[in-house]
View 1 (spheres, rainbow, N blue to C red):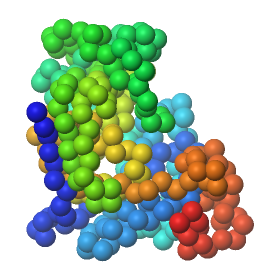
View 2 (view 1 turned 60 degrees about the horizontal axis):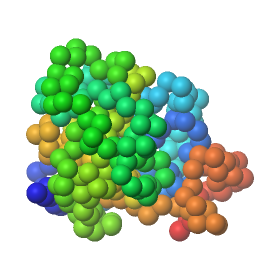
View 3 (view 1 turned 90 degrees about the vertical axis):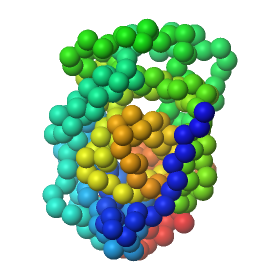
Length: 284
């Protein structure tokens, strides 16, 4: 069984709306600058605009000072957005509504399996990209009715039950045709964390649907994540956006940039006197 999503520019009757979505857990760096400016420029080329969404769901890692710096850095880079910034930390009702729809459809379930149990139950080691979770073993799934009577998601870790063996296909504007097999390239993934925080996959789909985003521009490290998210779009009966995953900016040793690379933070480069054009040219 296959699931296919074609990537086309939105029809001319649908105005382009993109989004810029920094996570305020540290300084923005050169990679962020290039991705966010590319998103802004693609919107402008399509006669559209972008919204700014602060993805500040994690109360332990996200800080107001990083939010303020991100907004200031984006403005310094020349990025302009429609209206006031959205804050995911203030949009819980949107995420709970999506969780309820997935619960009612029997597509999510509470999972009490520990990380060690997941690792030990795996039949074979699986190479995972940096920052991704291991393949969840189907043997640890609860019965189909698990969680149907839950009124709220809090206090439990919830996973999306993937259709094992289904190939999720989409065409990316930058990376071309993509195909990921559920149960092989990714397993049942987290949609709600045990600490009562919506997980990335659920939150970004809920927001992009609610905001009417027509194209998502982000780094190519999230290609696999797109396959997961397409399953949520289908479950909600929502039309997915177009996709554009950009090459990652890497350091001199070939490692992808992270917020720990303070010397390449936008703020540090600004303090050294670099212009926005010089910052965007780094790593090209």
